[in-house]
Structure formats: structure tokens, C-alpha cells
Amino acid sequence: AQTVTQSQPEMSVQEAETVTLSCTYDTSESDYYLFWYKQPPSRQMILVIRQEAYKQQNATENRFSVNFQKAAKSFSLKISDSQLGDAAMYFCAYRSFYTGANSKLTFGKGITLSVRP
Amino acid sequence: DGGITQSPKYLFRKEGQNVTLSCEQNLNHDAMYWYRQDPGQGLRLIYYSQIVNDFQKGDIAEGYSVSREKKESFPLTVTSAQKNPTAFYLCASKPSHRGWEKLFFGSGTQLSVL
Image (cartoon, rainbow over all chains, first blue to last red; front, side, top):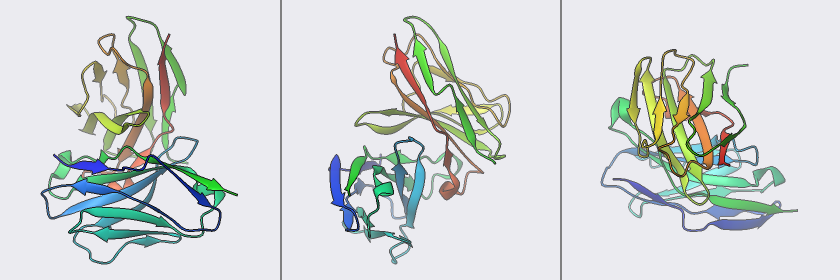
């Protein structure tokens, strides 16, 4: 079974600075998807960014980018120019590429990010 | 606007009581999911449904039941058999067995035991 580990329960960043959130995963598969979700105080989950394992290029969405290291099974999220609105809980998630209609997301335990003004 | 509506936002359960959490979507999505979120535990899958009148158990289905009589609705019942029901419950939906980037979440229901 796949597992997703987020070992840092909390992190803090100064507004306008850059922060990196870590995520590692364990899988025997070669093709899969990885996601970062944001859960703000409203508690509604929002997709931040996703990465296909077969793509070598790291995904980027505006101020959010990932550092995907397939051999190391590492998938970190970098937030540039941090804003107060980035304060939230962030979850890393994994999905197998091959399990078809019954595939599911496996989530990490999350990390709480606070942004200092 | 299309979206997922979960109700109520807060729910209290007495000992031995069954309670039902509502999840309604107007996104015309085929698949719907129920997750449980505990502090420090992340999200865990309770039940999911790929099509009307069909559903499957997730990782922590014991003490829960669901139905999928309509495409728009996927209610979750927390039965008295669930001994530790206090948690935050999230419903989600997506268009088909593909398109996980199109997974949408509701705003959740916080269930507490009196």
C-alpha cells in the first residue's frame, strides 16, 4: 500500500519570503500522480498543484511550484512571495495511475503553515 | 453557481443515536466521496460511489452507511456502531473515473458527541 508522509506538523514564514513544505511517499509503482491541497480556515479543500510522475518537468502554478524527485520519492511544495492568504493547512496526496475507476487519493497528515506579517 | 453543499455545518450526536450528514452537488459529477478528517490524521476515505445505486467501502467504513439513489445526493449515516464519531467530515465529487484534478470538496460538517 502507498503511504504519504509529511513529517513537519507546523511551519512559519515571513510575508513575502519563500517557504518549502516537504512530502515523501512510498510506492512500488512507476506511474502515479501527486497533489498538494490547501485547507484554509474555511476548511474547504482546494487543489494547489499536481504532478504526473512520468513528467520530468516540475509543475508550476503562479507562486506555487514543486520539486519532484522521483528516485528519492520526494515531492516538496515551494511557495514564493508568501502572502497572508497562504496561511492554511497543506496536504500532500498520492494517486496510482493504474487502478482505474476505483482509484483513490491517499493523503498525508498535513502541515499547518502560518504567515507572519 | 455549481458546487457541493454539505449540511449541517455543525451536528451533535447523542449516545446510541444515528445521524445523517447531507451532501448534494449540482456539478453533474458521477463520482462522490466521503472523507473523515481527525486532527493530525489527514483525510481518510470512508465510502465512495462511482455511479447511482452503487457504492464501495473505503478504508474506514465500519460504523458508517451510505446510499446513492440520485446522482446529485450521497448522504452519509453515522451509526451507533461508530464509537468515536467526533470528526470533521468532507464530501467530494468529480466528473468520472478520470480527472482527479477536477475533484471538488464541500465545506464540511463537524460532528461532535454530546
